[in-house]
Amino acid sequence: MNEQLKTAIILGATGLTGGILLRTLLEDDRYGKIKLFSRSTIGFSHQKLEEYLGDLRNLEQFKMDFNADEVFCCIGTTKAKTPDSEKYREIDVGIPVSAGKLCKLNNINTYIVISALGANPKSRASYNRLKGEMENAVLALGIPKTHFLRPSLIAGKRAEQRLGEGLANQFMKVLNFVFVGPLDKYKSIKPETIASAMVWLANKQYNEVYIESDQIRKLAAE
Image 1 (cartoon, rainbow, N blue to C red):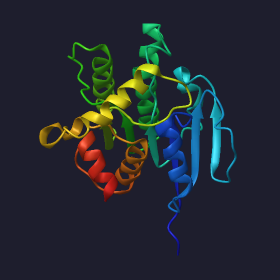
Image 2: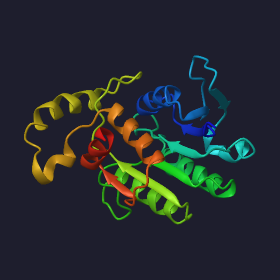
Image 3: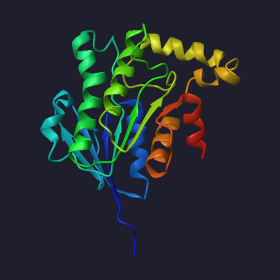
């Protein structure tokens, strides 16, 4: 008898890493249904896909459909894209926390979230501070299998142009050669690597809650 196929939820499937994660799960025979929650359509159909469109800052509206074996959160924005600090917080902190609350409500025991290297609620950098606050708020929910991936700069071509990020990627190509030993975690990382590690974590037992960039690469290679 075949094992029952799993259902996964992806938040942020229209983004760089989320899109790669989506394609990875669509090709994975362990998954029979992929639910996407986003503001806009992914732009293609597939027999495994279900799309739920709306403002994710009001994720509660989807609580009846927010049922799955696993939830993958790839949500994130930038100051350039979301200059309003309140809206920025609603996206980078509010959405992942709201998704975590729905996981608890609907007894979803696996929640895997992309955070950031340097996440710390006491950080002087607002980006890292918000990511740290998000992690703490999600962890406080007590979801049994919670993992935060903390990648360094994600090296990949996005649909929207990010000049500063593009320049940083070019700079990181040089620095990657000198980031060795304890500095290895600061090397830029490919979105495919992050997606592979997320799927690995969802299907294996792993005790670490916080997974930094160098460890993400190791898990993706297994």
